[in-house]
Image (tube, rainbow over all chains, first blue to last red; front, side):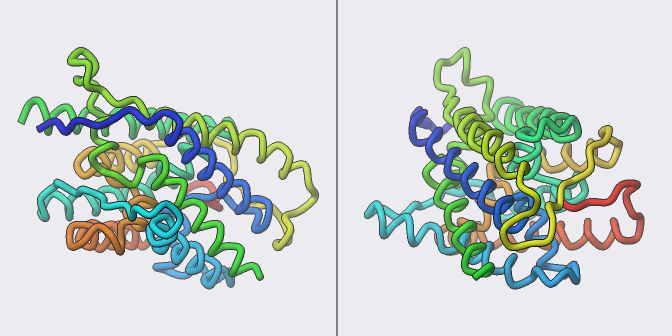
Length: 143
Length: 149
């Protein structure tokens, strides 16, 4: 199955810049890396550093973003999740476990880590891009 | 004040993910489908997300980290530099497989909580369980380096 997807370089560049702005805000105000998996996992099992309310507020901002986006642009985003429930549960488990086990996800390693020229993050990004591309190839073109 | 700022930070982050197309699993999977390059249907947009994000963060971090301390905290908490270890590789590899299966990573999954229906809820529940499991296992077998990510 291959869904046609339109090329949106300007929107994607601007969206990326907003993500970068958010990462900069978190560093400027809180002195922290904007890693979603780090923030969420420390909310699940509180780190005891007095940051739980801040983390909860950050996650609330993420969750409410589509409503604000809809109010600003007039079109609320409708994500198409085509994967079946069993595979979704497997995928979610792998994403959650892997992000915490590997100390970061697309945001922490991909944006913050690479911006700091971290070798660990470069290795992590190369690794997860490779397995993600291989997985999509297997699912779409082999299985 | 700090809590309001963190809410706004999460909101800006989420708006960025939506505008960028990262919160649309179909677009993410189209980006990861390199076999579409010869077919001429590959969508390279998401490379621009990383370019935009890194360009802003690279410059901003240099300015911000030149400060003595953050505005609302005692000090900057940065992950220590170090070599990649087996644990980083294992975690990143598993993360990539999950990302490739569903086209969702943690930020976009949370952004889809209210708009993605039951599939989003299934993914998020499993993701939170996976995160909790990894946290519990990592406190049982602590990494060699401290983690402040």
